[in-house]
Image 1 (tube, rainbow, N blue to C red):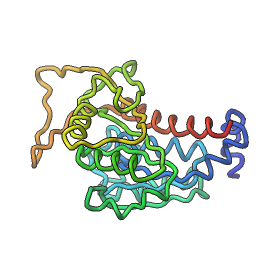
Image 2: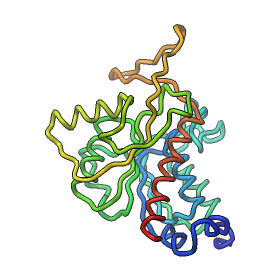
Image 3: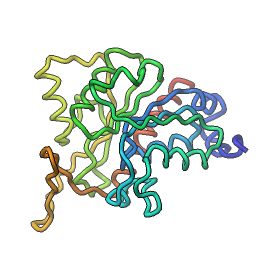
Image 4: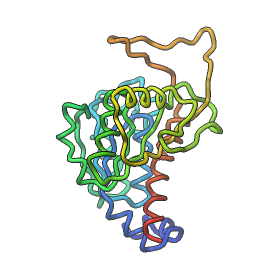
Length: 244
């Protein structure tokens, strides 16, 4: 049955690339609005070895944009719910889950050098910066990263670029300032998905300010899904290029 699942993919990519996709080892940090759709696309395309990392449980506010969030999964561990769905797509996939948060302090727990690809869909700027720096400078893994998907509505503004060439994205700009301030040099390229849209909310729309001055902005399912699918697409294209 597994061969039939990926029959249409192999018709497009060829058997060599299909086999390569099944052999690469991928770790995905963050399975929210961006990461959950990325994970689904990878598994549906033939990736078998996938590790999912996220510390959160499904909340009712996730339902508007996160793949595994429904009224029936509220309160459940995100990575466990997503794993169950992905195994329903390909029961032979080797999916590992880590119900924990990546931080500079916990970074040693993840053995990044054992993966071919690292996908970053982390929200926290501190954690994101550390993951990008550590992957670039201490591993051979290829890394793809999602910049900010909140406060976006225009699909035509979504694009890709190398990290230092990302424009119009406050998150990318903040990360670059952080690296420069700390004299951090990234030894390899990071290909990113981002949007340069400058959406101005209506007067009656406000961000929520949570404990610790964390600001939560509005998001839409189709935007976060496109970001996630684009991350998966960049990985797949990289595998294609290495096997043709």
